[in-house]
Image (cartoon, rainbow, N blue to C red; front, side, top):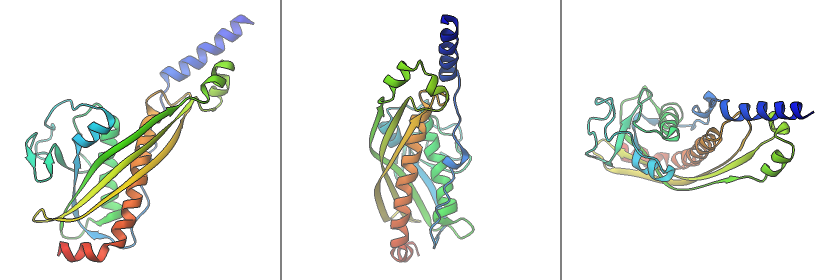
Length: 232
């Protein structure tokens, strides 16, 4: 009997520690498209603002792709460390949620906010404001009591709640501010044994960003006429 219990514990621990479910492609590809699209805008991301909310540090002050980030660590039109990005951009950061934000934002702008086939009309910048991020371990006592058997069958071990302040700014070709939107995205995501300790927090952060962008797209649609009048 002891050998059976020990085998179960080892199996569950191995599943928890060594298995890590990768994020689904749908995490980065929102299908929430605005009914009327803006003309093409170039994407920028305020990397230091995301490093601040996630408590991360850059690997380097300058990206490996100098063509995408010609300013390096100097001041850009939108602040130090604010980089022009596209679908191929790889940011110098150890924090996956920042690279995820880059991918999520570029896809959302090109597919759901702007028409990339039109003539470029300006720039759009993504920034992060404040964050609330907390793990809830209410399931942990049951996990311990059942030796993790229910976790192996899919019961959550804990959950993460993330509330992220999402800021989007639109500028014309002369770098004049056209519009600024600020919304809070919310997400709660459970951790199963196969997620690994970090990935469920990553998923919650990405979902919170998506939620904030959905709310901002509604505001962009509301102010479409005003934005277009200033971009022309």
